[in-house]
Image 1 (cartoon, rainbow, N blue to C red):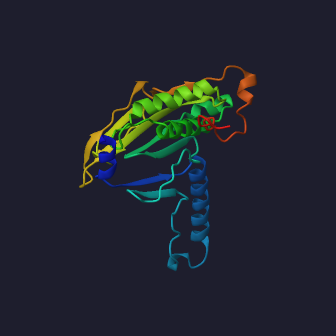
Image 2 (image 1 turned 120 degrees about the vertical axis):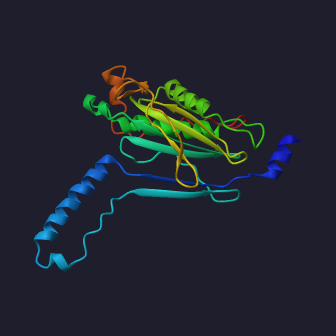
Image 3 (image 1 turned 30 degrees about the vertical axis):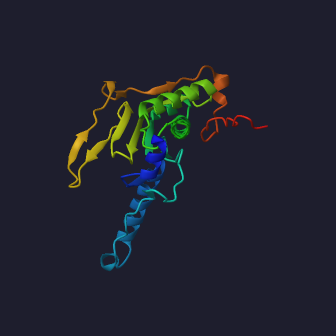
Length: 243
């Protein structure tokens, strides 16, 4: 009976989820091209009377209205260079987070984006598989992070590297924000006047050495299996009773 009551009440809060991303490679290329255009423009006749060239880097933006009955589709990974993000809806909860890939792995011939995208894909899957008895129950972001990384290790996916991580859960029933943070992927909570009410602290062993989730390559043979891959999603588990 309580679950029926909770479902009938529906979410008390609405939210807008806005995400923006651009890879370091795309940003660097755009800036280089922009500088060349500006330099060429300033050398051309009549440049002083023309409108300046607009600076508009190719930043990808996604804005979602997270409300009861609104169209929603979960996102499990992005092409954000070495980084990735995800979001998922589970009953009256909005779960979202980021994985900040460690670029130092490039020096070892390992693409760090594969690890970060795989981690967010497993995080989105773990969020959607979270069991909540009542619609108004809150998802546990720490448990989602733990199950996502454990799933990667259990499936033995060849996604080598490391990343810092942040998983957050916003309850649309209570308005409460719960977070799980590892490393220097921090966040800020602002009030309606854009004033910082809370700033998360970085977690690091020492300067520029944040805590990380890591899967090191075991040997060269296993390392080569991940070459050329975009990222890995969790294995599809058939429903009980299916053929």
